[in-house]
Length: 377
Image (cartoon, rainbow, N blue to C red):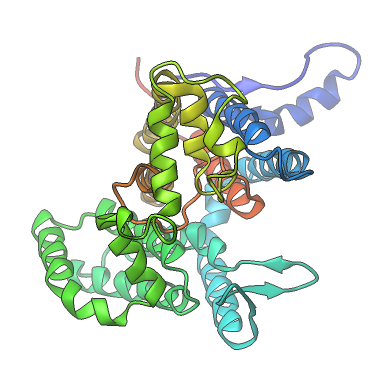
C-alpha cells in the first residue's frame, strides 16, 4: 500500500501534543503530490496568461491556499459523517438552486448566483452533493429492487440538472449529470440499459435542438465549422487552435507565447488557459500535463478499489471520474473536438469556486483512503 505523508517533526518535549495532533496532520502522499504538481503548473501558466490582469495571480494563489485548507479539513472528516449528512447537503443544494431561480443575481444574461454578502454559485455545490447523495442512496437502499432504485436515483439526479439548465448553465448541468451518472453506472447499471439510454439520447437530439438557447446552438455550429464566423463566434476556437499548433514540439518558452500576450485569446486565463500552456510548452509540455492528470485519476481509482464500504467506493469512483471529465472536456473544447461549454481545466484555470470544489473532492478521497481496507501482501 502506498504510504501516507505525515507533516511535521516528531519527538522532543511536546511529544504528547504531537501524538494528539499527528492523526490530523496526515495526507495521502501520492494524491497530494499530483495536486501540488498541477497547482504549480497552473500558477506558472497563469502568471504568463494574466499579465494584463493585475492581481489575478495573487488572487489565484489565495484561492489555492484556501482550497488546500478545505482539502485538509475534509480529509479529517470520516466518510461515515459525510454519509450521515449526505441527504441534508443535497437538500440544501437544491434549495439554493430554487432560490437562484427566484431571487438570483443575473450576470451576462444568466441567473446563476446568489448574493449573500458575496456572490456564490450554488450549482458548484451540486458537483459534490450529487454523487454524495446518490452514493448514500444506493448504500442505504441496497435491498431495493434494481429497476426501482435506478428510477429513484435518476429522478434525484434530474431535479438539480433541470434547475441548473434553467439558469442557463449547460456546462455545469452536464458536469452534475456526469457526476450522478457515474454513481449510477458504478452501482451496477447494465450495459444494455446504458446502450438504450445512449440510443434514446441520440434519437432525441432533433427534438432537443429547438429547446436549446441561441448561444448553445451557436456553440454546436461553431464546433462543426468555426471558420463560418472567424471574427465572431468562431474567433476564440480558431485562435486557440493556432496557439496549440504554433507551440510545436518544445514550445516557444515560458512567457514567450504570442497568441495570449497579444490578446488573441480573450479567455486565456480561464477556460482557454490550455492554449496558452500548449503554445509555451509545446507537445512535450502537453504530454507532461496529461501524465499528471493520468496519475491523479490512477490514484483516485486505487482509492476507489480499496474503499471499505459501498458508499465510499461509489463516491470515490464518481469524484475520480469527475476529475477525468473536467480535464477531457476542457482540453477537448480548446482543441475543437467538443463544443465550448465553459468547463475549467482542473487546478490550472483561474477561478476560486472551481478550486474549492476540487479541494473538497480531493479531501473526500483522502478521507476515504484513511479508512480503506488493508491490502494483503
